[in-house]
Image 1 (cartoon, rainbow, N blue to C red):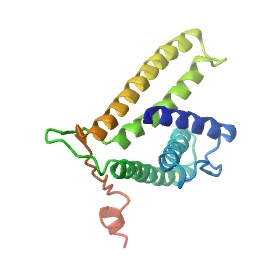
Image 2 (cartoon, rainbow, N blue to C red):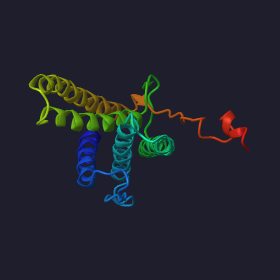
Image 3 (cartoon, helix red, strand yellow):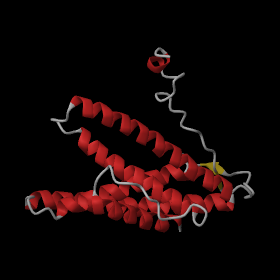
Image 4 (cartoon, rainbow, N blue to C red):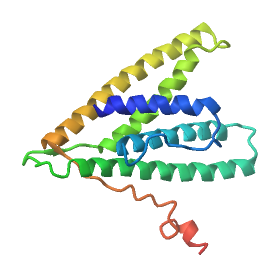
Length: 202
């Protein structure tokens, strides 16, 4: 099941990132693209999310230097684009994998592609990791820990449900009961021609 593979890789990514726990650490994907393409993409996807999670924490510092904040905003923008590109690579993997499936006449389309559902699974892995930390904080009150444990229980249930939904979707696609139709995100704010502010500076 793809969800089992994804969840395992996501937990591995977060644990490996936390060894140094810095946004400036080098990225070395241990899963070779030519040996396990989907594993390679899943690892990259969660690494991007993990770094961006840290970016989002840092930029919310009320005492952050404005110049540093602007520089960090640029990094977040670049990270968002990298995240979108990687999701689209994952969808391309599935499109290629199921390209020879005979789609049934009554086949239906899903509201989101497999990769965008997997994107949510990656974010859930980070939420679960950080919520768990809140349940074992030495400096937190028992009330805080209990509230966070309740939230963690919901997140764990959500991961189980989302994992099942992803596996079911891919099963339906492989049987021709559903079909994939991927729309590129077409983000406009990074494009020199589509963003009027950037266009005006050319």
